[in-house]
Structure formats: structure tokens, C-alpha cells
Length: 528
Image 1 (cartoon, helix red, strand yellow):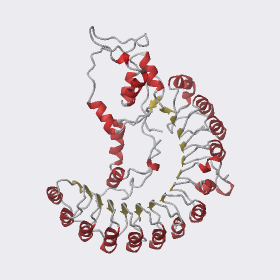
Image 2 (cartoon, rainbow, N blue to C red):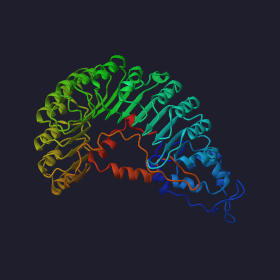
Image 3 (cartoon, helix red, strand yellow):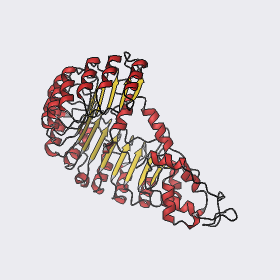
Image 4 (spheres, rainbow, N blue to C red):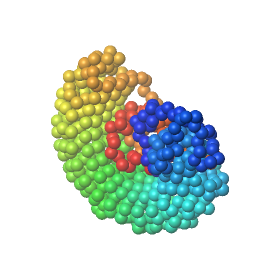
């Protein structure tokens, strides 16, 4: 489900720019609104080619336009209004309480919507059960739903919705107040559910009285589960354990001891290929449990200070297919050379390595770059031990490296000189807050390696953690909405302007920018 209002297909950034760059020079003079459905005023002697286009072709043209341009096109004539509405499968609505009265007119125009976002301002009163049920009756083919701050929804409303929209494949809900009964209703009725993302679900009771969630009929179809900021996230334990085909598990800032649950999960679910653990209570016991997932390819350990070299070594020994490893050690010094050497020896397929607040030395880096011949992306941030010697080691032996990111490390211009003669496949270097690297050093590297893009930012340290924004799961947040002229809605096409704004905001962190371009394969990171 898209994050801005959109159509059947989402144009890429390149396609969007292309459509703006090459605007057709039409000879037609188009009136703002024509009473006749197909009449368009044209200059005398000019050919009206557009009116001869089939509806399907015109719909394809609309799909390549930005949200604002689509809205303008819908005002041209009634035919365009109809085609634009019928070709829009994605819709984002301002889910305030007054939306209820507008639902019939909105979904009469947009009658083929399959991907819907309902977001309410936290200071406003959201839609209630009546609105959600009415939407479900008009959108029985809905496959993706996002709910944000819809605090008036209850278990009864979610249960009725689930019975009417049994084809749902993706559900994302944040800051809602329905509880376990509503969630279980979705899992029992939506047997094709593939992705579930839950953030700050307020309606689940605390403590031992909390009603367990799952597994339900969706247990065999679920492939991705993401839990964020839940005081009672372990209520989802039965669902996680019962999802035998689960491939991606993400746990962010969920309280409780997760070691025991991870042991139960990995004993029964061996299909996991991607695991994210961020600021949760997990130790080497949990890492040892994860090692049962022999097909694991992607692992993020973010600010889990109880995880040590011992646990990482145990995991690496059995998860030999690991391709991407992100570790934010939070400067706890519990993971270092010993654990990284185990990864280097056991995981030869490693392609991407991100180390934040970890202090590797030449000892481990030399083994890594020698054994991991496919290592293409490397980020070293906030490491007190990564200096010119370590960069020289990387330059000399990391022949496959394409992109290198260095932040807040004691590297100098001598390290840049080493890169000039090494890493033959290098195409991009980003250096930030490394005070020893000067503009002259960066310019010297650019002159020696003309095909390498060198970005240097030696600004003062910001008042934030080195990893802020780096490993966050930003695939379920909503962008600002653009109100439609006559209804409180916005289509969900990923417009170029939104992407530019999003890139500007997230680009404040060097590693976040780098990884967003490097990693193209995180299915979980895809938004609806």
C-alpha cells in the first residue's frame, strides 16, 4: 500500500522525472470541465488524438503522472474523471470522524481500490467502527490496509472488517486501541495474510492476563511479522511460533525477555531468512537459538548489549549463508575482533557489513576482507580503532568492495591515499565526521580515481547516536498527505516530490543514505 495516493502501478523516480521532462506539446485547448462526457475543445484545424485513445491507454498515461497532475487531469472532463478514478487502486484517506459521511461518494468514484491507508491526526477524533465496516462493504477486494492513530476502532469493528475483507494480504496498524480479539479476528478470517506489522497497539491488556494472539488461519500464509514498541509483544508468541512459513521477523523496542521465546520459535520455524533485533532484551542464548535457522541471510543486531562475541560466533558457525550483517554495538565492547573473525571464517558469502559502535582492528578486518571475497558494501561508524592502518588493509585486500562508508573514525588523509591504489571495483566513498580527512585529501582521491564518487562531510558531531536512523525499519510510516480538492483523500502514487522530501529527511544520517541505496532486497522494507 503506497504512502501517497496512487494508481495501479507506481512509477519509478526515473520514470516520474522522465514524464515531467518530456511534456507533450499538445495543440488542444482544454476547458476545465466539459458537460459532455467526451467533448474536448480543440483549436480549429487541429486533430483531437486524445479523444480517440482507448480508456485503457488513457489510464496508463495517468499512471505515469504525479499525484498533483492526476488530480488536474481529473478536472478536464467527465470521461477523464471517470477513467482516473477507475484506474486508481491505491488510496490514502484522512481518517477523521467526518469521513463517514463521505465514504459513499469517495468509493463510488474510486471503486476498484485494493490498497488503502487510513490515517488520523493524533489530536483529532478518528473514524469509528461504522466507517470501517462501511469501507469494508465497498472494498471487498481490499488486499492491503494501513491504520494509523485510529483510536476509535474497537474489536467489534475489526472483526466485522475481517469478515468482509477476507482477501487481505497485508495489515499495518499503529497507535490503535483495539485489542487481541480484533487482531485474532483478522488472523482467523484472512487466510491469505502475508505481512503483519503492529506498532503501539494499546488495546492489549498487560501482564499475565493478556489474551494470546494467533496463530489462526493465517499461520500458514504469514511470511513477515514486525512488532514495534509493544509492552506486551510476547502475546504474539503463539502467532510467531505457529507461522511455519515465516521468513522475516522484526522485533523493535519490545519489552520482556525474548531468549525463551526465540528458542521456541526457532525450534519450530526454520524457514527464517531475515531477523532484526533492536533494543530488546536478548542474550547469547537467543543468538544460539537463532543459529538453528541455517538459511538465515540477513541479521540486524541493534543495541543489544547482552550479545557478545560468544553468541555471534555460535550463530556464524551454523548460519553460513549470511549475506548481510548489521551490528550496532552501542559502544559496549561486547562484540569485537573475536566475533568478527568467526563471521569471516564461517560466512564466505557476506556481501554487506555495517559496524556501528564496534571496535574492530586490523586483526579481524584482515580476515574479513581475505575470506569474504564477495564483500561489496562496508560501513564503519563510531569505531575508535579504525584508522589509516585498517583502511590500508581494506584497500589492499578487499578487491570486490564497491561502496565504503566511514563515519566518526580516526582516519586521516593517509587512509584516502591508500584507497587511491586499492579496491579496484570501488565506485563510491563517503566520509563523515572524520576530522583527520581534509578537503585536500578528498580532492586528491578524486583526482586519482576519477570514476569513484567521493563525498566528504567533516562537520561537527551531532547530538545523536551514531546509529540513529541507520537501522530503523521505515517501511510502515505514512508520509504527509495531500488533500484532494473535494474529498479528504489523497492518492498514493510515490511522487517525485515526496521522495525528494523523504530523502532529505533521512539523508541526515550518512549510513542511512548509503544503505538505502545499497540494499535493494529487503522485502520488509517495502512499504505497502
